[in-house]
Image 1: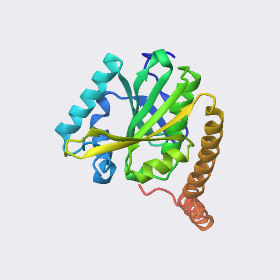
Image 2: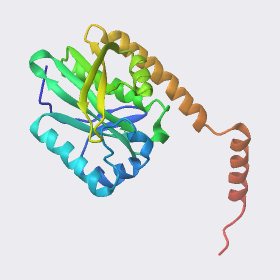
Image 3: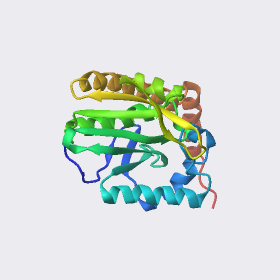
Length: 230
């Protein structure tokens, strides 16, 4: 397995993953403002701009030391920042890597953004980095995240009870999921199908309705028939 890795962009049709940089701070902070994003995180890095800047600084430092590589998640059409994700906990001698610290602004939920981001990261991990195993950890009580991981599909391995203590003093138990290289083709096929459906939904919602297209066409013709006023 190759690690550390050269930071590279992972382009898709719904999202583009780019290595996190200082220039993403302001736009990413706006995407991170909704409190519901952080319900199951150990902390809320977007409680204020100073705290968020420290989170970004720590993420960039992790890339420098080779302990993680954070990405900014961009909307592929608008180029706006909508979230972040990372490769972390590398075990290059054993071909292991974790995908974690993933979040999306709520407007990007249920759009196919998360599915494509996972497809991009997993493809890169298995086919470029040569991973044998990719794993995911989530709070045992985070049902939405657990359903999303099962839907990849990733294999549920069990729960690490009282895995770590949070700043609030609560003990967090972590649900662990994984995908092995021999399982990757099945997950890849499923994510590709889901992405195809998501793109069809997006195209249907973005296409103008027939009566709207006619109205625009008539207005365009009318505009062209009226000479400009000088």
